[in-house]
Image (cartoon, rainbow, N blue to C red; front, side, top):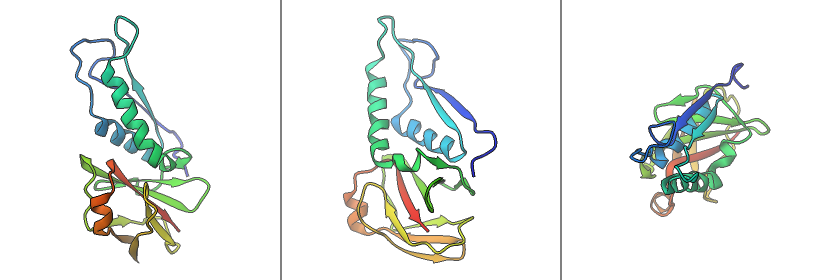
Amino acid sequence: KPLPYPWETCMTIGNSWSYNAADQFKTSRMLVQTLIKVVSRGGNFLLNIAPGPDGDWNPLAYERLADIGNWMKINSEGIYGSAPCKPYSHDNIYFTQSVKQNRRYAFWLSENDNVLLPEKVNIPLEGISDKVKQVQLMGTTVTLNYVQKNDELTVSIPESIRKKVNMKYSAVFSIEY
């Protein structure tokens, strides 16, 4: 169920609301992870990009938007048409749920641009009383092995997936129940 008052986060792509030739742009990882955090709380993310004197954006702005778009091509299912769900976050994992299906999304935030998943990921299941039917890692077609015990899911990530998958900024687990 969505929060009664969704909130918006406005962020600049750099450090200034207006054009600044020496502006330092935020990383693509920071922008994607901020999007995840805001959506997990039921909010909207607004990104300000100030045009230069010629009316165009800095080339880095186009690069950042392309990076966000590439991440969204794989993981947008957990962003669009989703709603917040408790526990919103746990450590470096943030949650949303589908408004149309019995599906929860767990966004595992990476400390680096390239995601390096551990052998096992523990995901809290607060609010899910049903048995989990399937766990998939977005961007792959592999159904992952897992153990559901009480209010926690322990997902095993095969070495072939950990080394082969070229994920950026966040791995997203789709949990069907």
